Length: 411
Image 1 (tube, rainbow, N blue to C red):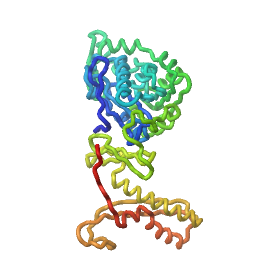
Image 2 (tube, helix red, strand yellow; image 1 turned 90 degrees about the horizontal axis):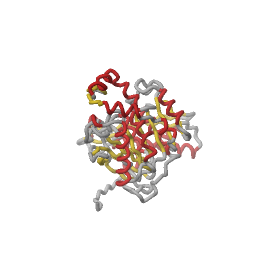
Image 3 (cartoon, one colour; image 1 turned 90 degrees about the vertical axis):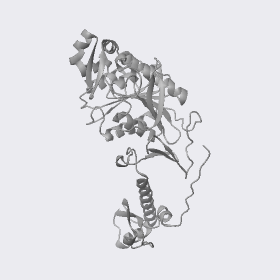
Image 4 (cartoon, rainbow, N blue to C red; image 1 turned 180 degrees about the vertical axis):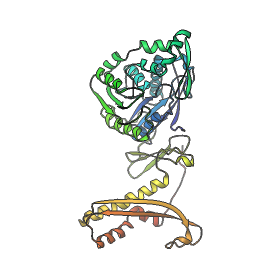
């Protein structure tokens, strides 16, 4: 999958360059976070990319990066271990603070979850930590290649196959993960903790979540990711994690969106919309007042399908205005309108096939709205509401005389 976000590179403790992506909201970030990916994964694994994008749409900037020797980062994976992953996290936090703002939230998936638990106490500005399918001890990963352990111990290293790729695992890696214990780190965390875990996770069992939760002090929370797999390959599971995480973390992070420190773009005033590219392709961050959303093109047109298309947004504006106008009118008349459902579609048709168009040459844009009105409405009331549907402000804007001005502003 193609990635998005702003390119973000920084050195690890050995001076090697690590590659990251910073997902920035369209407006001023409420806070900054770091996402640590799963063992031998990359920053573009589904869970990391989808959750990071979803959080950025809700105002939280998220840095996701490749650990040393993985993805686009420099270094040799064979020379890394769990402790070096923790050092990479510390380096990421330092770089984020120097270039933008210190992170206040750490998110870790699988072994990345264990890494953020180990790193959190060493990053002073972090106030909240979230783990997703995390093992309670780093040594859990040894079970992924247990058949090669005798060879690693005897020869000092072995090639193991994980996630469809081969990696060199060394004896020092085994020693590091088996000698590292998280219990003391979790018990002394002194930061808000959220534990996400699936009861059907067949890679990292649910007992790991119980061990982490029991070791931690309050405030702590647990959310069951019912029916989700370990990698959260269903985008609905990733969206659920992002939604829940945003609601939870708002209690523990300072909202810096009104601060001048580290701002990238001012939040637009009411009635104005600001759009900014979020990546090298077509993904756009949109700030409308205090609200953030994303626009994109479908994968069939070279996009990433990270949000509605421009025409989808146009139809949404027309449909929303129509439904709101009908609701206002029915409420004022005290008519028994229970609900409004609008289904819209856009297509280009030949002008000669358009009965209401003045032109008979070329093509024209046709937008169709199918309205479903529920309630004990009379036929006269329904007919009147259909008339009113043509009078919503967006409808009038689209069908009336328009003036669109495009100009360049100083960079």
